[in-house]
Image 1 (cartoon, helix red, strand yellow):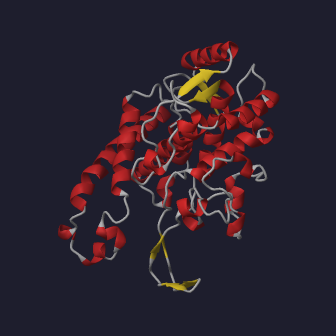
Image 2 (cartoon, rainbow, N blue to C red; image 1 turned 90 degrees about the vertical axis):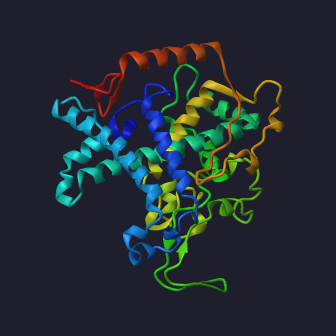
Image 3 (cartoon, rainbow, N blue to C red; image 1 turned 135 degrees about the vertical axis):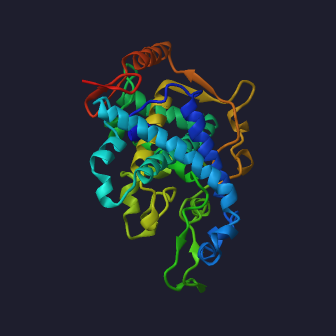
Length: 359
């Protein structure tokens, strides 16, 4: 939300969060493979008259709801721009780019911005939830992370993006979270433009194909002991996922959570950075433990502990966040108070807590 519209969500229980996550829930439900025949057989949309598009009946209300929500954010920022109070953000730059000359409508622009919010909402939070679940079961991983954070960052300030190069184990934890529980178990569908012959199989032209990240990530040939949460497997990977994704050799990939090919996740850099800084800050501040009465080895992170659906999200679980020291706890309170009082800065422009840019 901050990157897209320059707005911070004030709290979890607010209208914006409820609206966005309801959209994500609807999307996850309709994106189940095979739910709509027209997705499996796309020519149906052209062969049948629109009156016989039975899938539209359930989809059109969802489209109208999306239009309402995304246009609300778009219109609000446009008003801020007219009064010179808009914070620096993606949509502000997009509007200033004269997008109409590229044949893009205002509604399309609003949906483009909306996809950024959707992509960064449930996806990143799903990965983070998996991270908390696995970390609560692995105190040894946390101990090693704490040692690195104390050595590089210390306990008088929070970690920043500038610390990333000196925190290889924290970055490895983020990569291992994305490997062990990719945000989606199946990648974005692709379309073969010619017959493809692979290991004795023929994949006919115009077939729908998709990467199975979960299967790849659990192949012991590429990831020894794939069932184990072992961040150290990534210590030799010095770069971010974008570097490995650009390689022509698929065996050089760190993981496949962001997909592959022309439809690879365009927000992979933002997603990876978000996961890194969140993991770094949480582990800098807290010991993550199972709920009282439960031991680490009793934490369930099997497939049965996850919800069905397109996105990989754990079922509701409990965990303890215990401040590592009283001093760290006080620093967190101080930082939180300052954030609620003083606002934030985007591209060297001060923004107050209501999302209004201050000269």
